Amino acid sequence: MGEGRKAHAYEQRHRRDRLICRAAFSMGGFMNNEQLRDCLEQKALLLTRILDVTKQIESRCGESEIRLDDLLEQRGAYMDRVDKCDSLIARLTDGLPADERQALQNALGHPEQIAETADPALDLIRKCHHLTRQAISLDHSARRLLERRYEDVRESLNASRRESPGHSPFHG
Image (cartoon, rainbow, N blue to C red; front, side, top):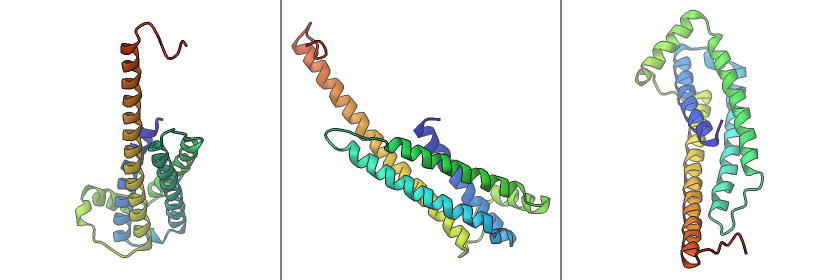
């Protein structure tokens, strides 16, 4: 899956995860699930790392010579690990008793009816959502820088072709 599609998928999942945890807290007991909290903490840590790597990518895209080294691979590995956290969150949600699952589905259908709380798990969901939004914003910025760089190089190449027809900078 391409980097852009992964980023969009994360944005969608984090929106869903935030709503799930808000709904689950209103039902009581679900947020006491230690495995879910651990998973959310791991996800927040991984998203922090993704954000850090994305900051490096964006910074390097603004340099005169763009060298991303293995940053894209690092970020991809972290994204794969976040996918595993998302899978676990989904399995934990699927494991709810039917009445709680139904209450959760009702809450997801009407998220504006869920009361705000000071639950640590909800704070983790908010943090994950915030980190994702920041990483997506930086990723878009890096892509814009790369697109501008590409256009500048392309214009320069076209200008050199117009100035020297029959001579290519690639064929000495």
